[in-house]
Length: 124
Image (cartoon, rainbow, N blue to C red):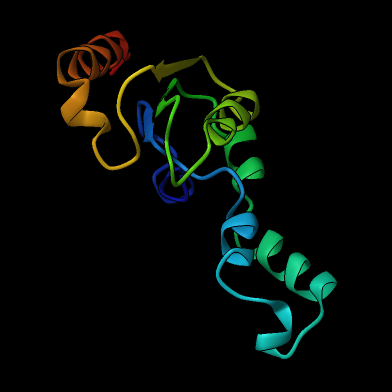
């Protein structure tokens, strides 16, 4: 996602099992107190450093988002949130089979079909 700021002329973006809210993920692993800060300061710092919503709202190119319904690491609501934030045309593909680590293998035919369809639709 951050690469779209570095390479703004990229033709499109593909996200697989992506995180919409890094703060949520960080708070699963540590507490602000462990870092010697408050929850408010930590929240502001993370939001300032990693503004995924702002990046996607400023990215007008097509985006393909792929996720599994039963991802045990990153809930599917992250994919749904990312899709809402995308400024450009967006395809959200939620696979009914697979999980975070085997999305590609379990859904290989449909997975690569989605990528092929997306890439061939790009205007380059």
